[in-house]
Figure 1: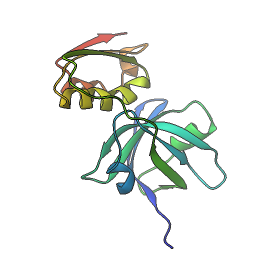
Figure 2 (figure 1 turned 180 degrees about the horizontal axis):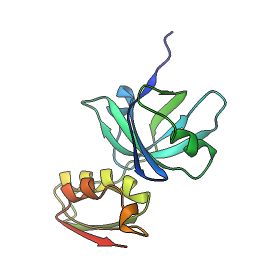
Figure 3 (figure 1 turned 45 degrees about the vertical axis):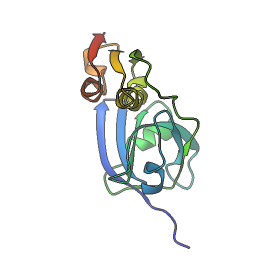
Figure 4 (figure 1 turned 90 degrees about the horizontal axis):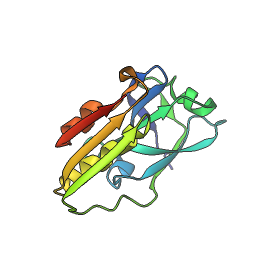
Length: 160
């Protein structure tokens, strides 16, 4: 039996302590829905942690996570580079966000929560809703996912 290899295909720092990783995971990507999460282990000695998917692409066979480097495991995630692999990755898990055409929807988020908000705003927009997004962070330099959320929002408001 061949083990799955969850290779990092893109790694970038969004802020000094937030890392975004795009991971090759075709079986997860083709089943993923907005609002779901994965459980991952960085290495064979690491702890298993849950992280909400910040994006997924069935066409590319990838999922994206964003991690606030606040504990041992998320700091380890922040050291991974393109070509590195995760020890384990399980998902998608959890109930997806309920999506339907509501009309006008306001989504509000801040900090690392913006990575989690993006796929939800995108999915609600694809369901035919008018999207008003309010995003915030302590400072402008700490805002993440503003370009992505802007592309799927009819109105975008910033708070810092």
